Length: 597
Image 1 (cartoon, one colour):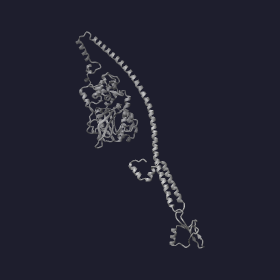
Image 2: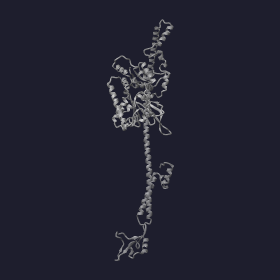
Image 3: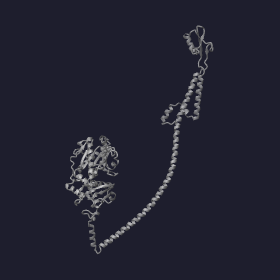
Image 4: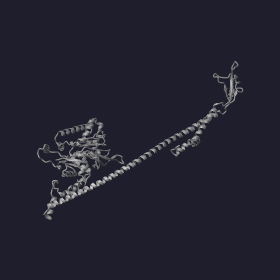
């Protein structure tokens, strides 16, 4: 038997007799012999105990008044008893009618024929009990043996299967090695051919450059023929200082070679000193702010509200878990009936603007500037949207609101900011079918951590940002705030915002341009928008190089400030500012089309 431990073995052996310990050590054939002997003893002893009597008997009769002897009872069984009880009866007063049966034995006394009958019966019980005990012991061991045999069979089958697989893998390995060797040979041949082609291209390009240099020298020699060395020097200086139609302002050909012409040192310092500049992306775009409790979602949302108000938006806050005291100076709604009504108003207004714009002949830029001039720039802040689907029963309204807000709000100057606990469809109004829209929208994940002392979640001051239509998450720092913003009444709209209102004369001029009436030139980009320094430099670079469509992958290597180059995501961020200012439109991943003004 297998024991779990030494203690298990001691306890098991203490419950077994020495006989069973001896029996357990016997081989199977001897165990069968021992069981057979025990059964033989039991059967023989039982047979011996079955026959004969174990004590003497006195048979007697009862003498009737008619002098006859009655020796059997009504069931025809003879009257009899042991000599002991016969003597006891006599002492107690045996009736005189009771006489011994002269027909049985000697004067009614019949001697015992099997004096050891009880011992034979005990021997039979002992034989059967011992045989049963030994059979039970064999059965227990057989069960254990069956388990081990089953395991052994499975082990042998597993070994056979592993051997077959190993043989098959060896065959696969041989074939795979041959394929890899063949592919390596093909790649080597292709690489050699590519090297030869590149060499030929280099030789051809070199010959072209040499020819161009020789032609340039010949042209220069022809232009300066008959000039003295001093006249040649003056001619070269004149060429360097000459302005070209591709340069702007006071830039010269020599100035474009100098990296300091791109941005001044003070401007570069201002850019480096603005680590929160990324937050500007949340002002004009529909965005999702999410994260675990304590990550800083609400504080960031309040900071964005402040920036939106400064930019000139009419900000409406929908917050079911707060009240107006938490949003002083801002239009806010907190009951579910009011929130549902504001959502309905938003949907109606957005659909109305889309219909009006589609039926008009205004360009997108003119339409958006018209909205700003009329004070219709509107932004909705939706707090705790995870519970909207539970309390707003108009599911069709919520679905329409979610899809319109995530797709059609930006160009109608009605961006929304959604604050939720996660970026799943369930957490966004409980609407199904928003996965693709959510995955492409501007998102900010606020990162939280658990305080090791209080065990309460708190903000790490860090976040991850995924820009619109991008799959890359960028690490950023949240704006530094010492207290939660709850009073927005001191937030004053600046005189210069990204889309300043237009006066009547400007609006009339827009309509004239639309119908080609009048020949007035358009405003310059600097008069229309207020970009960050780097976004402004990028826009100037794109217009200076006369680009209509700008692909970040094409001009990334040529755009630099003070010799510093930038990543694709940094340039995309500035491109978002240019698009948000209405100076361009997205036409592809990392590609914008500049509006022709």
